[in-house]
Figure (tube, rainbow, N blue to C red):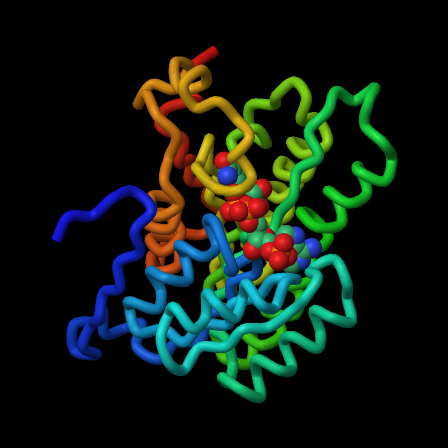
Length: 259
Ligand code: NDP
């Protein structure tokens, strides 16, 4: 069978092939319908986890959840809306039980030089990228304290660490995520809850579809954009690493090494 780029490959795994410690664990992936979040959901489902795939567009979330196989849940939620986040956690608890893992991959960008950035675009980025993560983490920590443990991975960005012209507001939200995650990691470590950040570079998703990879790849030491599955590996590594908390794992093909 010859595969072309863009072909979808369904991998059927027997339960006994799965990584035993993950079997049956409930994982919430906000922004799980496409891109990096979808790749995380796929990897966790392969390991035997039960997923809640969450995004605003329910149709797309349902398509992803169906692709994962039976027993997964699709939910519509705007992460920046406190009531919707609360309802989403109630629904997950009812349908899947208490969550062990939370991944925050919901994010938006409104790239522009600061002088050309509208206030509503600043607010939208802060509300989705930063407030949204705070709301889901608060709701998850409540459940995880009762469960006496859990793990959270928030998706930041290399630009949150290095800065980028034309992305001052987006970078601020991603830098904010680091401060938030490291502080929360200190707050909840005694409860055996871990909080880490993955900071990707350029990854091929809808968010970067308008960018010219041929031009930009010259600045990346590994010479290419990353694949969402390459970020998912790092996310799952942090979820599964029992002695790692408060870390920021950069997954950027070496971009951070450049001046
Ligand atoms: P995509 O645009 O491909 O996917 C974004 C996901 O977030 C979708 O599932 C989208 O679904 C969901 N989403 C967006 N806004 C909301 C909201 N208000 N409430 C709930 N869900 C929402 O992006 P990527 O996969 O590329 O990005 C994932 C994360 O990684 C983001 O935080 C992004 O900032 C970060 N990142 C991405 C990089 C890249 O190069 N792609 C680089 C560095 C960081 P829907 O629209 O239906 O709500």
